[in-house]
Image 1 (cartoon, helix red, strand yellow):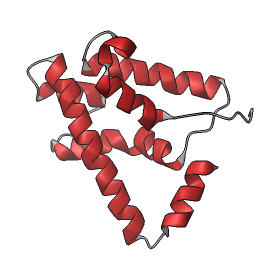
Image 2 (cartoon, helix red, strand yellow):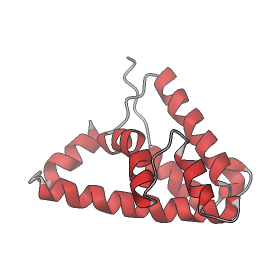
Image 3 (cartoon, helix red, strand yellow):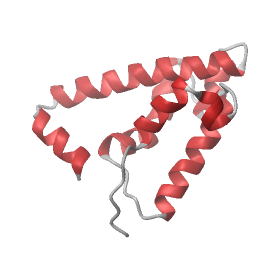
Length: 127
């Protein structure tokens, strides 16, 4: 893999999309956001950019988190699950960011419950 210096990452781009969805995905849409993130992940992989620990956790566990949140088990993408409980794409978009906040908070609590020091978490972000 190519070692590249990369500014930002998944959560930085998500913050930008939340603030200005029209600039990045055209409109506030959970389905469009899902497709953007699939392309973003693929582009980074093609460029040899390794995901951070937090990004890997999102890619590997967010779908299950959404399933558990809605007490649902399906092969549908997390965006489709969210849309089942929202009347439109815009509210699904807003709900995604609420769920993401809960997911990140849960991850932060798990890290501290496992006894990993903040220094180790910071080092994993830098690596």
